[in-house]
Length: 296
Image 1 (cartoon, rainbow, N blue to C red):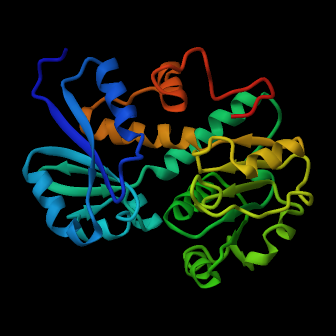
Image 2: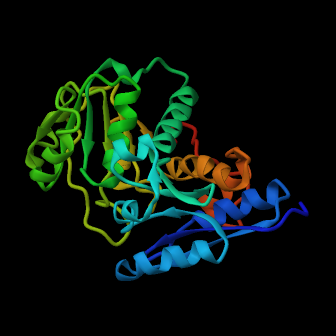
């Protein structure tokens, strides 16, 4: 074990008991022989402004930030990075010369997961070949839209149950984003190159995502950032139409990497054992994100 002073970090949210972040970060702490710990800390929205500074005063090096604090925590930072400002949300906090800095690693995590999957498929596919349909307009959608536009996707078709919220996000990229009505979510798939669900619809305990993929082109790639269940109904339907799919668990793993680096000064890898732990728990063995059809 590294003999340096132990580093403490964690994830804050409400509720937080379901979070897989402690499993991820404590795996890396052990793998790299570091002295430290990572824990889940439940903070109710009304307590955030008081509790967060107290935690930093107690010696924490930083935190991941999850629902419902990603936007509210921005006001508690001494500064935010350019990427966090452009996305409009913070998911990672760290100290720099005593100042609390907020950044966002969600776009990195989403794009890294997507590009790893595309490389694994071993077939010709590029995100720049056509429009991307993004379902949702919340904090996750902001990061996904940012990542896709940085990657050179030519057009985003944004579809959200609240059209006003989608229009507010589209104002940040008026030349690249077209807003469509929620009841057009199936129709806009015609001619699309990519589809991603950034909403909580389809998650365990949430309402179903009702969408019809019959209009989807045969080369369209389908992704879901929901990872409980791993294979959502959206992804199952996509597989029924022989479309390539990308699950959401890889985004969770890859967004954690630059956050870990901020606190522990090591950029960790996503190794097979971590995949097994997050997907299948301590009993998982010999299992992977990738099945025989090349899905992720």
